Image (cartoon, rainbow, N blue to C red):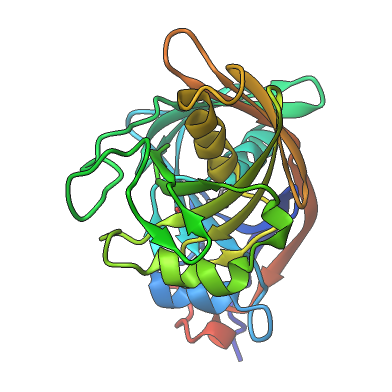
Length: 278
Ligand SMILES: N[C@@H](CCC[C@H](N)C(=O)O)C(=O)O
């Protein structure tokens, strides 16, 4: 009897936003589609994670990073996963993503990522129709007057007196799936603590409430900076811990924070309905 070769993975997280990382640059790693991504992300029947990350060779960068939400949807960007991949690589690297080319490098005890330029056009978020993205004239119950920012992926940000008091588990999915957002949206509720500090909770598109969201921290910081609420370098504290976000003079977003390798494991592809390789 021949046994099916197991598929290796690395379990990682950035401030508790957790990932299963598959290295598709190695042989034996299966093609990932939405069904497999959702099955592996399942916390009861799979390995469990907020996002599945697949590394592939790239013709234009050091490697390509593909990101799948827990619901199986493939997305353009993930700040925390980029720091995790930066930790795995252990050296400065240019990373190709669906959202553009970004760069990760070791920085002190953590990883710094140049996330590229923010975008503010209504059709770049994207929104369903033209409106001012600095003050969207819309609201859902007590959440209103949000900012919209695309930092590779789409975000809407509500500034509120106390983000911990918002019922984000109920309002998050309503806003995520509102027809105003044709590609759905990540929903951020933020409280300005000072001109250098923001507190943030995020309902992630395709993943729900997470302990941290790197792109959410970037989008929220940029939204707050555009409104003149904070300086161009700010600490954003999520339930899982803090990230430092800077908007540079040459219009780039730099996010700095920790990443952690939790463990290495392997799974039986047959258990996930995959035929043995070769
Ligand atoms: N956790 C991520 C964001 C992952 C993708 C997001 N849910 C989306 O659908 O755009 C981060 O750290 O940025």
